[in-house]
Length: 333
Image (tube, rainbow, N blue to C red; front, side, top):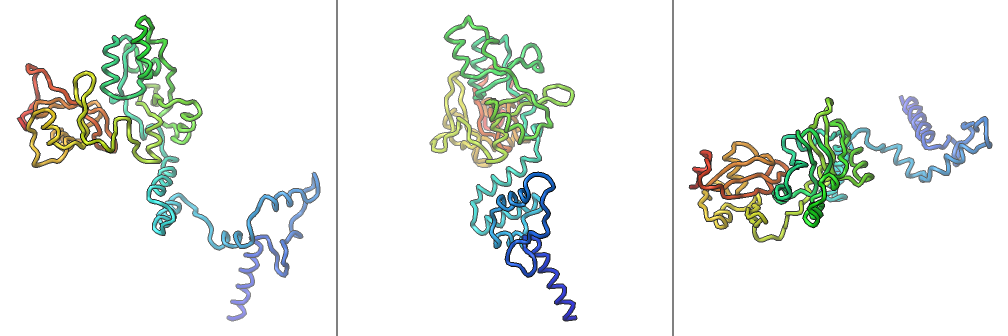
């Protein structure tokens, strides 16, 4: 039995030293078992390999005894262990896991669906275009002609200023070429193209060539770094209610109901919910979607922006007194 164990130990040691480039009974790397290439300079291949591997004997031994992860699941477990041992911050772990997850995601997974896309019509008057830009707060818009499926190009919101200074300009001259990608486009590849082409918006098409939605570079990056604060966000703001140029108000989804009541002079109930987003979601019976409109307490709430399953911003207006209001307006007056 002891002889068998001894033989097994010798075999294990031989395999170990063989794996790290040393032979039994030698203090130098085993080069006798490596044949030189038949062509070219003698020994060139072996010397290049030795020069390319700068690891020490100890490093190679550690790698042999403790190999790296064999799967993404093991890598994620390693990230969790590193965070537990305070080797990396929780934010770093989340980003690393986001990078791994993004490798398996496609444009269709994170795009804004076609019915929720904010588009501009090529033949719309300037005032209508400006109102749409102010109302949505986006910096880029797909522009269509006739049907929404017929995308002509992309308009930068700042380019509308050129129309204001020179009304004789044709809107078509301000459009930038639209970029189209399939739903199956890998997010890693898409991010690489966004960076190389300096383009931040792409139209996603399905297998039949129809418009499935749109995706921005921000949508892709948020899969890695988490939610990116938009240009409306102000972490130090004392209020969640802001006046817009068209006379309406922009209200944060997490604004308190008391704040909304004070700003608009209404009496929405404050006992059941803390935020305006909570009470609107309750009235709708589901999480509000971007572009969705509802009326409550004599006010009209249009969803401007949603993130992470919650409303970030509402556009709030007072409907005309003679307009028909749904039953949800009975709540709070």
